[in-house]
Length: 262
Figure 1 (cartoon, rainbow, N blue to C red):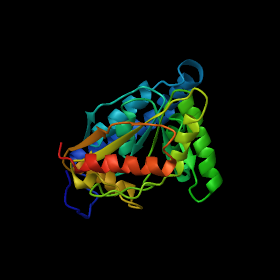
Figure 2: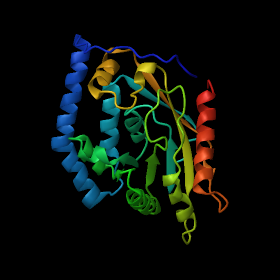
Figure 3: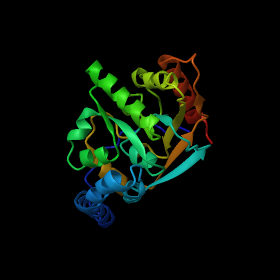
Figure 4: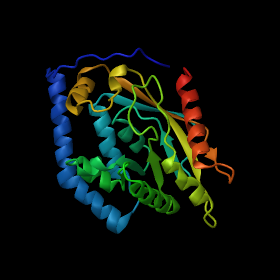
């Protein structure tokens, strides 16, 4: 399925519904930062390193306030270790995937400095990278490998930026180098799961350097949206696949899923 490209000029619409949702989001962020985040830190540190109860609740509430419903398609497989590779349409891709299980995301280094969001990202064991520095990418890959070997799921958006949902960008292969490294480790196994993300309306897309506030207000004031998470057939790794071949195959499977009307 696809939808026409549109670029509406979103005004800061503060109708009662929008004001209520905006207030709800502010209260949710404040409560989560001041109360839930310290609790989550303690749970991860002392009780359950992979606990996803509070993050899943937080993500679900963010999506509910944003009028986004998540619908999962395909064969979702939660065996670990695994690496999820998904196309990137909006910031809402992260809560959509985050409602499913504890997932560490690969994020640009700037996210770590964002107020509140950076704290939440660290509590999800996000892996921050500076794409302008090759050493940063190598360090991120080592961290990814360590997390995957420990049994966690890691998700990355190999396009490196967001697109409008009607087309795919090129898939960067740098982070797929972690796959052969893990495969070649003694006794290690790995599954890569391509996931196609598709929204039912064009105003879901958050492109490039667009301002966040008008986009959020647009979600609050616009019609309800369905976010389809389409789990493509997983890639079972073998010694013959290098990082570029893996990136191309992930992109091919995601493109096929997005082209389907199912």
